[in-house]
Image (cartoon, helix red, strand yellow):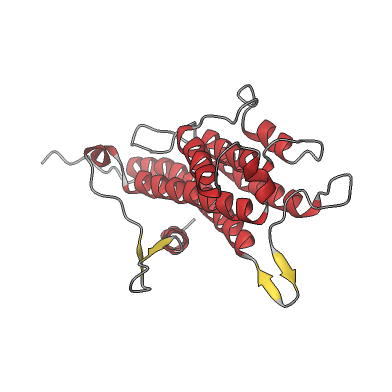
Length: 241
């Protein structure tokens, strides 16, 4: 890929990440969701920062999906034993951040948890299980990490596969039904003049970020090899001052 192609991919990544902004309720204006400077950022390249921010935004998207699905499917959050919706949402978000599986699922991981969540026979908290399964799958595709440094190596194929798994989960969410013919979970709404596609947008952002990172990982590794060979071909000496 040419340098122009790399620039286009980086621009696309910036545009996708810019889609996740926090809103100032008082002014109604949008602003970037930035991190404060920290000492560990000294160990990160620009690419590491991009992957870290993409991971942060992916987990934030899952937190929003958790709340939206609980609101559309209140019977699910009541299965958690939480006294109120807000408490159930916080409990789910804590699980996303800590990586602690829901009760009864601690022996399962990533796609195994997704399979349980999308099984019509499952009687547990389907929303919490689905969202935790997605978060566990995405984090495991990144070698179990949520922050990335110069020494970290990621596999583009794993991240690409995670994007496809998100697509599959989103499709199964809308297409599978229980024994009574009811959807496993209510998500997008298009009835009586009401159109709510916020779930589709969140899933789309997840897939977009994962695909961009997978492409950039592949290109980043390729460029390391090309730059090394070019250095040999043109006998470029390394700077000493």
